[in-house]
Length: 559
Ligand SMILES: *[C@@H]1O[C@H](CO)[C@@H](O)[C@H](O)[C@H]1NC(C)=O
Ligand SMILES: *[C@@H]1O[C@H](CO)[C@@H](O)[C@H](O)[C@H]1NC(C)=O
Ligand SMILES: *[C@@H]1O[C@H](CO)[C@@H](O)[C@H](O)[C@H]1NC(C)=O
Ligand SMILES: *[C@@H]1O[C@H](CO)[C@@H](O)[C@H](O)[C@H]1NC(C)=O
Ligand SMILES: *[C@@H]1O[C@H](CO)[C@@H](O)[C@H](O)[C@H]1NC(C)=O
Ligand SMILES: *[C@@H]1O[C@H](CO)[C@@H](O)[C@H](O)[C@H]1NC(C)=O
Ligand SMILES: *[C@@H]1O[C@H](CO)[C@@H](O)[C@H](O)[C@H]1NC(C)=O
Ligand SMILES: *[C@@H]1O[C@H](CO)[C@@H](O)[C@H](O)[C@H]1NC(C)=O
Ligand SMILES: *[C@@H]1O[C@H](CO)[C@@H](O)[C@H](O)[C@H]1NC(C)=O
Ligand SMILES: *[C@@H]1O[C@H](CO)[C@@H](O)[C@H](O)[C@H]1NC(C)=O
Figure: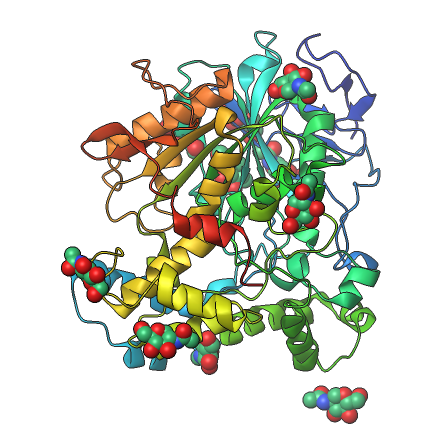
């Protein structure tokens, strides 16, 4: 039964562009929740949070299903759908995913390490489940996952506010796992409430393809597909924001992108996209927490994963991979990563592709080949490497093996330099470690996470605000529960979480990270200063990543 017809602005004349009518069927839609006409579909909010004062527009499509011929290719904009069907995104969407089985060991090991208890590596290995079902069995999993959520203040729909700034969230998860809501962990309620206003900013959270689906790479993909397809997903979602966010009360000229780990590593690739030429990324500001990726300095390295996947599936070409049923390739991707990813890796991730990523981001930042007109807040933790370092590294031979595996094309001279000069086997504390394990940990966290923050902050020093998240233990990802603190919990240091949220909200709203007491994070500047956020309070310190190690890693000489 079709009843009223109305425009997407059925609350007020606030939103000026009217693209036509949506037809609402009142038997299936809730008249008190707004419907937005996106031109290609009509999308209704699924709920209103009365206390927070915002609507939840959930699971909005931003790309066609990346299946069939579009598998392993850059995504495309949604085609026009039936405007008479109002969708409210009640069906959840999660991209197919997996994680190396070592992530299970890493969690157990971190517990032991931090509490000083002995760890039985062999036992941990022998009790691993055979298959990844336990970790990838989310019923929302589908290749048709290019969706995003918009959390928009009600005031914009009541005629009280318009042109609100926008914060876009990009999850992490090693480029092989993660989803836009983080199973509820990425609830922006607390962050939105920080603005102390019912018309603070709009929060957008995006999905992007993972594992083989987003990051499959080799010559064949380069020729008849898209290397780094996951980056193109993110870019399409950002273009969606440019095109449609005004319909939700947002200002497309005030977009901040925020990510953690792989999310922040991705943002680094957007900042350095096409070496700074070509289309400017569709954001003005970025917040990067522990930007992470395993440097793949040439497009050849991912070839191994590609070949192994084809062998697993008994196919011999990209076309055959495209012809496989969704379930088959979803299962293969899950099993491949779970059972074969070496410790610390999830097999897939961004690689140099001579196009979107013309060189490693650090190299591009070093010589000015990046998009200049972007301000950043960039942060790292103190013990990033703990959950990526194999517990069993006990000798220099183990250490060298780890390096050779992580950097398959490394030259002997680079290997010797790392081994003898940069991270020598001297364990009296002079070099920041007292055993081989800690030596490996330092090497991993510098080369894959911490130094990335230095490359960014030093290249953009006049527009960069640095943070060191120094709440013990400071393991990778620990800051995320601070960023998304929602109400009082005992899981986080409340004071630090409050201040971190204030910095983020202030940066989004006013482009300057300040807490409610007016304490600003200073610009990074030529003095390399950042704010160290500890349980005992915040202090301005010199960035300790302004060192010879990061300077060496930045040159990419291990390729
Ligand atoms: C969302 O749409 C579904 C399917 O049309 C419907 O069953 C459900 O009631 C809707 N939810 C809300 C909150 O309107
Ligand atoms: C319609 O949505 C409003 C706001 O979320 C809610 O209070 C109300 O219960 C919903 N009504 C129905 C019939 O679902
Ligand atoms: C609704 O908003 C309030 C206030 O910010 C928040 O405490 C609450 O957790 C939110 N509810 C949900 C379901 O997210
Ligand atoms: C929005 O609604 C979806 C679907 O119900 C839910 O998964 C998500 O957590 C909600 N987001 C917020 C911020 O409440
Ligand atoms: C730089 O970005 C700001 C907004 O963040 C914009 O107003 C300004 O025009 C941009 N300048 C250039 C040279 O692109
Ligand atoms: C792989 O494909 C070949 C050729 O179609 C076939 O002979 C072989 O039995 C297949 N092997 C497996 C394990 O499916
Ligand atoms: C776990 O992964 C390793 C590779 O890092 C592999 O050698 C081992 O067989 C895997 N174990 C299981 C149970 O999948
Ligand atoms: C910057 O470095 C990259 C990678 O080493 C190189 O491809 C590019 O040509 C350099 N650009 C400039 C302007 O020096
Ligand atoms: C690594 O360093 C050790 C001394 O700590 C030395 O014995 C070994 O030859 C070095 N190996 C390489 C490849 O540099
Ligand atoms: C640590 O060992 C190195 C190499 O043996 C030595 O040069 C240095 O003085 C020692 N430092 C301390 C604090 O003992």
